[in-house]
Length: 276
Image 1 (cartoon, rainbow, N blue to C red):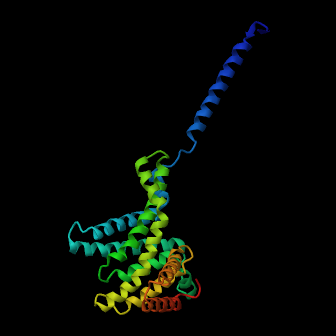
Image 2 (cartoon, helix red, strand yellow):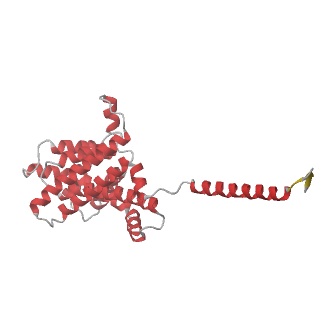
């Protein structure tokens, strides 16, 4: 105690109260800072933050749904034809959204059109427009179905990652198996793209296709052949040529078959784009 005349000031008690106040303030500040730490975003927040990707995800799921009901006509053959058109229209919507995402600033110019034709989304927008009003062909729906399935699976995995690293293990295992077979799926899509070219000619000869369809589809196929992001069409053309040349060079192959195949290979090679 320090005495100032008749009064005494208890310094030890004042210091104790001051320390306790400081400790309480420090604990409160730590609690506030822990509450302000950003928590990981959930699946809904992730989807709202990526609205365009989410819209493409929904349209791809709808494409898969319509394509499956066309391939497996559970609701009847007439309904299957309508699901065929719905799948192609949904794919056209997805391709348009993806093209807008890749080239957001539209310009009515030749340079913009040239740049758009380099995009895979523009290729499949053209693809959908080629077949949407034609006679339903099962082969033509497989590229749409499989591309939509692959892209939808990729975005679904991102949604599950946003929800939690251990969420929906069964769904994750299915997505992993699909991703493991991605190369085979892309080659199967390229095979469909190639063999749809003679299919459009046969459709024209049988009266089920239009006169312009083979020519427009040939343009689509040249775009796929020169694609920068998807080389599988070009790779499969090369593999098919090697296989055919190997088979026709065997002694058991008849001469007229060999000459026919060599002439076909030379004709297709002349039609191939120069810039591959």
